[in-house]
Every structure is written in C-alpha cells, then in structure tokens.
Image (tube, rainbow, N blue to C red; front, side, top):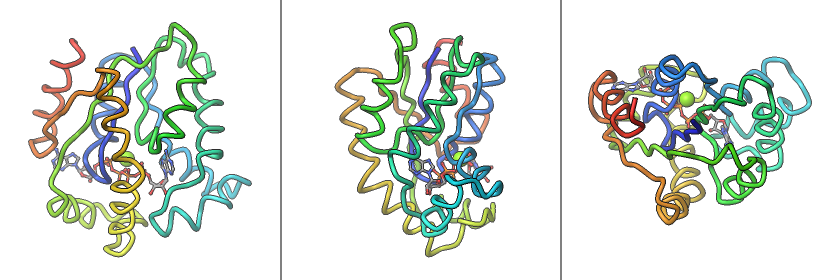
Length: 182
Ligand code: AP5
Ligand code: MG
C-alpha cells in the first residue's frame, strides 16, 4: 500500500504515519526527518537545506525529489510506504508520479484537517527548533501558498480522503484505519 499523509504543519502527519507504519509493517518516509538528518550530518544537502528550514520555507523540489527517489528505490519500500510531508508542491507531486512504477501507485492521500490556532499551541508546546512563532507563521504561509493546490490535484484523481485531526490521537487513527480498510 502506498499512502501520502497530507496536511499543514503540526496536523499529526508524523504521529499517524508511525502508527500506520507499525500496523502495516511498511516504512514511514518523512522528508522533514530526512532533511533534519542531513542538516545534523552537515552533508551537502543539509548545508543547502538548513537556512530554508530555519526560516520555515520549502527546500527546493530538486533536492527533495532526489532524496525521495533514493529512499523509495530501497528494498524495504517495495511492499509499500507512507510518505509524510511529501509531496508539498505540484512539481513534487508530478515528480513523484514519474518515480513510481506501475505497481506503486498511490492508494490514499489522507488529508488531516485541523484549526490553525490550536495547532500553533500544539507546536509551541512540542518545541522543535522550527517551532517558534515567527517560523511557524512562515511554515503555514508555505503550506497555504504552495501545498494547498495539491488538494484539487488529488481530488481529481479521487484518492483524497479528509480526516478530522482535531480529535484525540487514537480517534484520528481509528478514522484512518476505516479509510484504508485495516
Ligand atoms: P516537516 O518535518 O514535515 O514539518 P511540518 O510539515 O511542519 O509538520 P510537523 O512535523 O511539524 O507536524 P506533523 O504534521 O508531522 O505533526 P506531528 O505528528 O509531529 O518539515 C519541516 C521542514 O522541512 C519544512 O518546513 C521544510 O522546510 C522542509 N521540508 C520537509 N518536507 C519538504 C518537502 N516535501 N518539500 C520542501 N521542503 C520540505 O504532531 C505535532 C505535535 O502535535 C506533536 O507534539 C504531537 O504529539 C501533537 N499531536 C499530534 N496529533 C495530535 C492530536 N490529535 N491531538 C493533540 N496533539 C497531537
Ligand atoms: Mg512531522
């Protein structure tokens, strides 16, 4: 099964992706986590991504597509995967389609819907290095301008499913399981 977890900063993509990964025994691929590792390792990609991530902007499609390409060609991704935080632009979504082979089509795009005001509180409470009010504001701005256009893109393909992300974590997961049929 190939699943995309979609939604604004802090909506619960990472939390739910790890639950699904556990339930289905398929890898959880988070471009945010991959980029944070690259930044810690001070790799070439990490050096390019660092400032952009610290400002709440989007890392270039070219960089992100290159790390996803490498990761989904891994053996463990052959039986499926969960993408968390990718694609985030139309260009990335089109790039993804080109990377996938026939047996890897995307089954579900799970859009986790939340209220922005409540999420800002959630993120500040978590305290990751980009969970500062100014940066959170920019992360939402990037989401609204560049990522939201993916909603009609996936609606047209009839694979977009809305999930109420304002419920308790366990309840969100129950709703997800209903949609994906596990
Ligand atoms: P990324 O790491 O993807 O960050 P994000 O999209 O801002 O989302 P978060 O990871 O903050 O939140 P989440 O939705 O995973 O929620 P979580 O489960 O953690 O990206 C970081 C940066 O990397 C970007 O800004 C960009 O610069 C770059 N980047 C990444 N991917 C990119 C791409 N494809 N293209 C370009 N640039 C890219 O939950 C958040 C908190 O809420 C946690 O504390 C959690 O415990 C809590 N929580 C979760 N669910 C609930 C619930 N139901 N009720 C109460 N609390 C909850
Ligand atoms: Mg996350």
